[in-house]
Structure formats: C-alpha cells, structure tokens
Length: 99
Image (cartoon, rainbow, N blue to C red; front, top):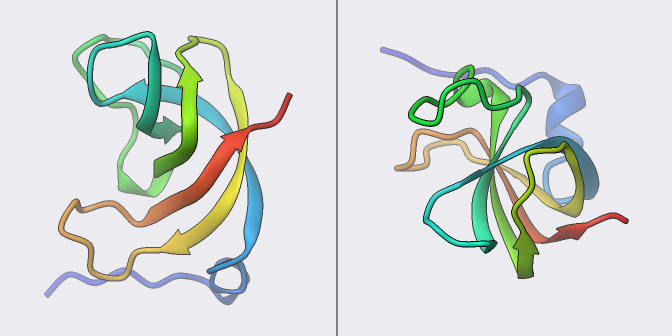
C-alpha cells in the first residue's frame, strides 16, 4: 500500500493564501491559460514533465495567464490533495500572477 505523509509545516498551509514560484506547464495549446501545472524545474523536453508529483502544483486561475518560459510567481489558495484522481498532491485555486 502506498501513502504520502505531509509534514506539519506543510499541513499548516492547507487552505491558506500562499505565493509559489515555478514554471508553467500548459495542459492545452494556447497563448493564455486558466488551468495548468506549475513545476519546480524548468522545461527540458516538450514531451516530458520534470520531477514528480511532489514538485508539481495543479493551478486554477481566476483569469487567463499568458504563457511564458520564464519563472512566474503566483498567489492563491493552497490545498493539499490527500486522495485526488489526478495523482497530484497540491492545488492552487483563486490564483493569479504577482507582478
């Protein structure tokens, strides 16, 4: 049986507004995106995701964000995903870029 343990320091952020820096990985083609993955590592291959579920955040923005290959800083409500069907561990909702 496989399970994930989240440290208390991370659990304390569950439901809180946070800022996260990372690289956009769009889930669909387009110049702007409301839903995408945010990765700790920059793109190295157009067909591969870097790292694993521990280094990815499922992002849901309030309004479209323009795609960039540069790192972005987003602010939103952080949620730990205990048993999500996507296989991801983290989600950021009500998100938007910090300029």
